[in-house]
Length: 227
Image 1 (cartoon, helix red, strand yellow):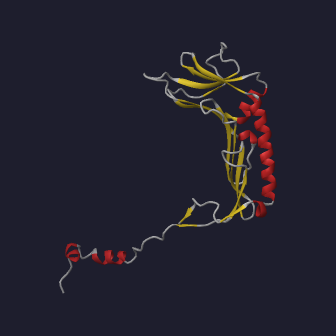
Image 2 (tube, one colour):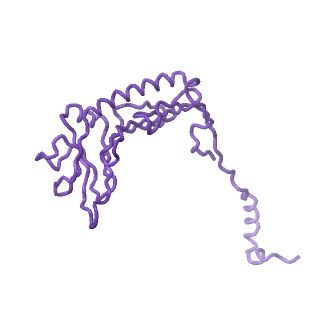
Image 3 (spheres, helix red, strand yellow):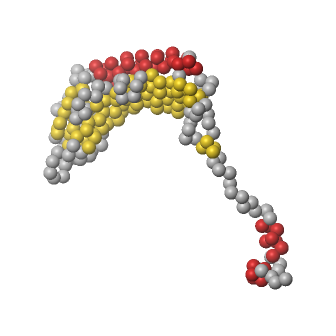
């Protein structure tokens, strides 16, 4: 019987060992990944982008929290003027804490016209013409046009606004020149605190009776893949 090409080229002393080793190798394809459904409930208070506050909370079958997110937005009005909002997000069983919210102020602006626009940043001030510039308490990053924004801890921003006689959103360039400014009602932040507190209480009531007041879902973590 004629030897195979492999046998001809392999030293006789190695051939038995290689054949034995090949018997230990598993050439089967690995098992396909699969989704493992984790049933639970979704609780909702408020309507996204329709109510001033909306809160979504995901619970497992025993009523334990899997994740939660809440958002408050100030009056929309004219999109060319500053907008204010706060976002809360948690994963796992930790509760949403009001003081941990991330507040934002954004102001959309189009390119001013021909030529290269100057660098401008968004600031929040009680006295935009004061001599304390550029040490603004709250300020974003410099950019040439688009949606200017700044982020801050909700507790810090709310405390800043609480005793302020006025709040002014300012677009200012690197030389300290004010490009535009608009007033923000300081009472907006007090109103937000009350609306958020009422939403948290509504969610507490709904979650206490989650089997009746929340929506049943087949998978609370559809993105989780188990191999």
